[in-house]
Image 1: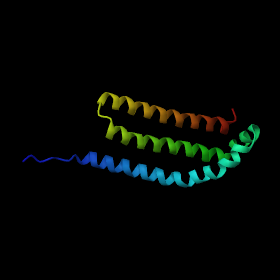
Image 2: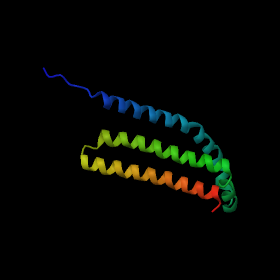
Image 3: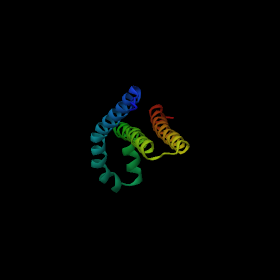
Image 4: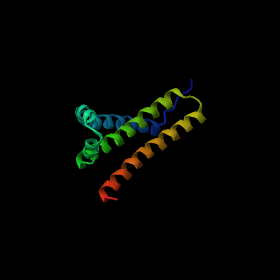
Length: 121
C-alpha cells in the first residue's frame, strides 16, 4: 500500500491564504457598511457636489481603502476558484497573471490618484 505524502509547505500556504481571505473580509465589513450608507446620498447629488464629496480627505481615504481591500479580496477569491476548477496549467497561469496585473493596476491607480490629490498637482 502506497503512502501519500502531504507537502507541509502547501498546507501552510493554503492556511495563510485562507487567513488572508478571512481577514480581508472582516476589514471590508465596516468600510462596506460606510459605503452602502453613503451611496444613496451620493447618487442624488449633482456632479459638482460629487467631486467635492470625493475630494474630502476622509472620503477619499475610505474609498481608496475600500477599492484596494476589495481588489485584494477579489484576487484571493478568484485564485482559489482558478486553482480548484481550471485544470489546464497554461490557462491557469494566464488567468492568475491577468488577475495579479488587474489588482496591481487598481492599487497603482488609487495610489497615483491619492498622491496626485495630496501633492496638489
